[in-house]
Image (tube, rainbow, N blue to C red; front, side, top):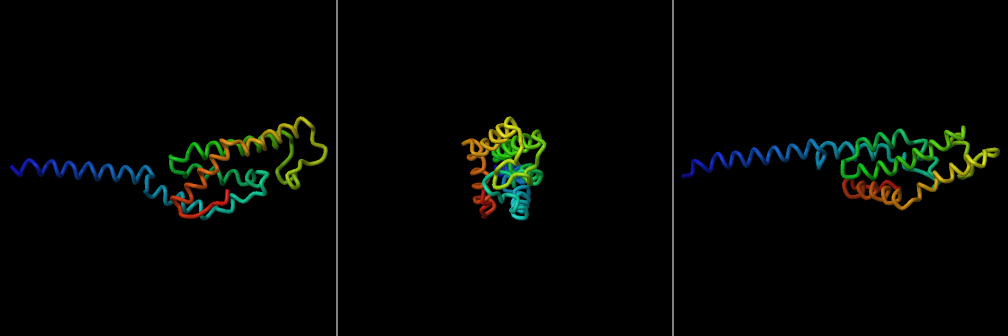
Length: 152
């Protein structure tokens, strides 16, 4: 009677191994999460900003690279965060100016009022509750999973 139990145990063990290996590959506690944490730690300076979002725009390519490495559970947060930054970058680019042209968050002299309004509207998106929640989610994930604070 014990013979039929052996195949069941082997099957259960095989299923358990498949589930665990699937979790490791998908990033739920595996190498993907470790590489994300490592990338966050090595690129932590990209989160520095004076509150205007202008420094973050300069670092947008690195932020997008970090977003691509993020675990699936915070993909929506990264999407919301980087989309708001992209919107501000696009408004600044459309106005034919650059983030470095802004001093203390103020637009350069001579910028058309319509451009100033578009840039201000895009900058205000960064303080939208959804974007703030997204930034908090990214910060919380770094704290809980990677064991450090980003300073967002």
